[in-house]
Image 1 (cartoon, rainbow, N blue to C red):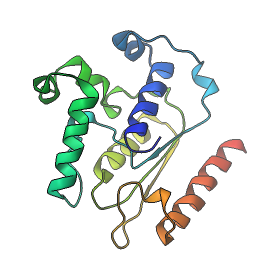
Image 2: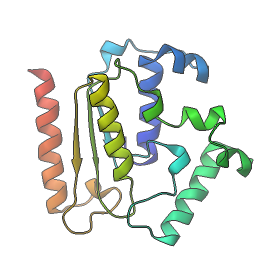
Image 3: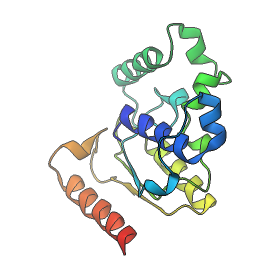
Length: 170
């Protein structure tokens, strides 16, 4: 999942692997956790409450991300700002992880994106004993969603992602 799609695939994976989360969001799992071989997060939003907190802040990007977050969550902007709200908690992948989460490859750039969230996710997965790999493209200015363009960072990303996925089949 990429960007907001990463949040969605993270939530989907949580429903399949965390019974408490599935109950709290009132969505029944459709797969057994073992049926998910891996999850890949590309410049993913992993904490909806921090949607406008990007690295190398850019006022326009921050504004656009925050407006998207408000639209994504609710019709009432006040709910978006209250992190204790259950809707917000359901959009914090990191806080809802368990040891049952699938092996995960997480990648991000370093400009107008969420590398801090990617790092937190990887650290939490490691603490839980979940196989994962973190790739942060830090050379030059690597923007949000860099995986969709042709660049040196994209080539390295593709190599590392495929190597991680291949290790899972051994």
